Image (tube, rainbow, N blue to C red; front, side, top):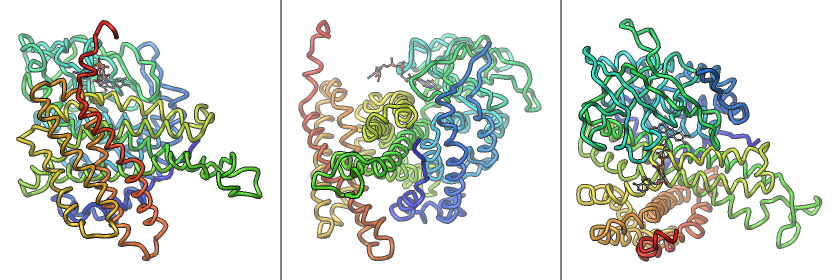
Length: 594
Ligand SMILES: Cc1cc2nc3c(=O)[nH]c(=O)nc-3n(C[C@H](O)[C@H](O)[C@H](O)COP(=O)(O)OP(=O)(O)OC[C@H]3O[C@@H](n4cnc5c(N)ncnc54)[C@H](O)[C@@H]3O)c2cc1C
């Protein structure tokens, strides 16, 4: 099994040297979040996850969750680690202090999520879903509901879910059939069936708080008639303690490709008592408020999987001897050379490295902007940050999860046949990360969100949040000779992105299928240019640090940047070509011939 070590040095490089930790510490409520304090939390979270969470990964995969006479249990060992995890406060790092959370920056929460996702992503779903549900409650529920439910969800005593999907509707939630009828006392009675509900039932927490999309009597058809409800598994008495069961049962658990340690449930609501969250018929709006953080959370699952696969691949490739270097033996006193001598293995190792480190920078950047969007006292800065996060959310979700899958597959390839064999752990990463491309809005839907909503938003204002800094950086560095090779390539790929944007906006107005046909390639192009911008900045920082005692680290950054620019960024040319080819070849294909 590959052994994961928290990449604290690299996390700190991104946070302390690429981003602006002083700006985060200056935000109201974050005064104590110095880089030293962030480092201490990372050390503590890293060692706990390495020692306690990581061993659950294999146990969860092998032993799986159980369903027996309506009782659902997480795999053996999960409950004890969950209790310890919550006891240490790792589940509520970013939760609001008024409900007992620690109120620390979202970027720190992202770093800890990365560690959990790399050590046991299935375990991460239990606190992760609770966090998503808490965000929705905090943003839209009444003070009374917040005061009853948030404190116990913050400690982890109660957990949470998001109940959207039904058998006949996943992407198209407007077809939701779950019903909510009003009771005389202002509460509601919910009936219907939800499927695929992550952490829908389990034995880790005393109560499970479901956030459920449902339709009230006479509600308008489609998405405009959906409302959001809070429905506890066990009713909560006036004193805040649990009372009688609440007409919420688990009908079955799903048998899945991966994520075996995470329960995925059919949840039946039979006249279950619930409470409306937010305004009637505005359920989707209430859900969307917490979408940015939830989607970023799924992106981090891709990042964690990529890092776990990368570390395992490096360890294996250094150790495994096979064949000789093309230029002659590198290890003449041994029967063969290590895998690391082979150019094709190096290509894969460096791709894993360049994408993972680039994505880490991308994820932490978006997270710090989320912190500004939530906390910056300057309204204009808050708005800018919010625009940027809205633009980048579908890109991080789709690109990082696609890459998590691709890099894990590369891990299997680096291990050769052993990668395909269960005991080595690589194939589990492939199976586990695959769902991240599907849930929380499929990656195809993310691409549509980008081209269909985000590009045109406020006459292109969102786009300017990325285009302006890149333009300014290209201008600022144009005379810098050391950066010249990076500068030319970034300018070229950025030019392609700008032209592709114009092409899609223009073509899409005349024919929406054109925008849809270009969407996934455009999202990938956008992500590649974003990583190029970040890699160039990381190379610039590293060049300035050479000769100060940590050359191995900084030279590796510069070399990885070079690999990214020479061996990955050129894909932007192919993507650009595909976008400009238009959608006719797919849309004109005869349906009967499929
Ligand atoms: C392990 C697991 C855990 C899950 N956890 C949860 C959970 O906690 N809560 C919850 O509510 N749901 C959960 N889901 C459900 C998940 O969010 C849905 O499966 C997902 O949204 C896709 O819906 P669907 O499966 O119905 O696919 P469909 O909506 O039928 O989509 C099928 C394909 O068509 C494409 N497609 C569909 N509509 C469009 C469109 N308008 N434009 C372009 N392409 C389109 C999709 O991209 C996809 O490729 C989970 C699913 C799994 C497998």
